[in-house]
Length: 124
Image 1 (cartoon, helix red, strand yellow):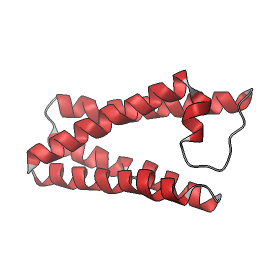
Image 2 (cartoon, rainbow, N blue to C red):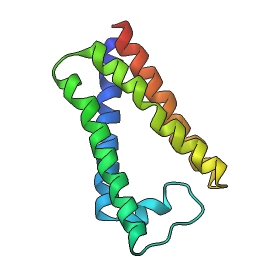
Image 3 (cartoon, rainbow, N blue to C red):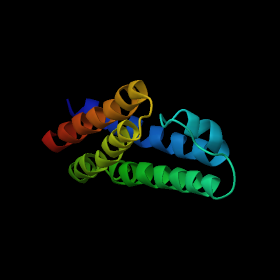
Image 4 (cartoon, rainbow, N blue to C red):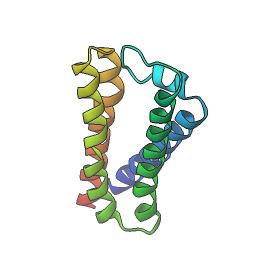
């Protein structure tokens, strides 16, 4: 089972880096798919999207570095801690009347996947 945890952790780490790079390269298009009802596309608003991209890249690296070093236990704890982000994203989208389908199918599902990966790594 620990191979499943490793695979999920790698997928989560690489996936969030890809999402972060997309937010840096195509911020408005990325924001539209995030699930919030609207996002202005000029000035300081783009700066916030840039910050989100950087945050996502950092989040992926925080998972991939200990995983690459073979520290599965630490990776498990870090992935469990990172569950706060997609859970918070889902709750924010719901609070601000965003797209419920995206809140649940993307963000809440990611929170479940990160929890499963973290637990599997902690049990290995």
